[in-house]
Image (cartoon, rainbow, N blue to C red; front, top):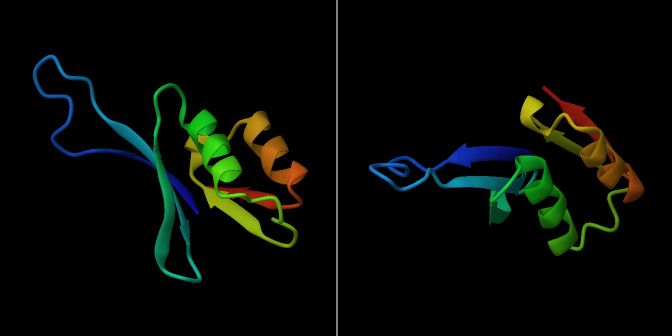
Length: 87
């Protein structure tokens, strides 16, 4: 499961909001990795999948919200043998 988050309390005054992308394993009930979304959330998700060594997504479904509904994300997941489900 992939999800974008904005840290509560960030963005006060002149400070920008801190945005993160989190990847967690539903079956394990734990976070696998987080990355700061400097630009786009979809770019951060692709970076996380690479960092996790997610080469073997065969038979796995990567789920996320509409924030990840971009062709490059779907291509990145499919290139690793997985499929996507966006809500």
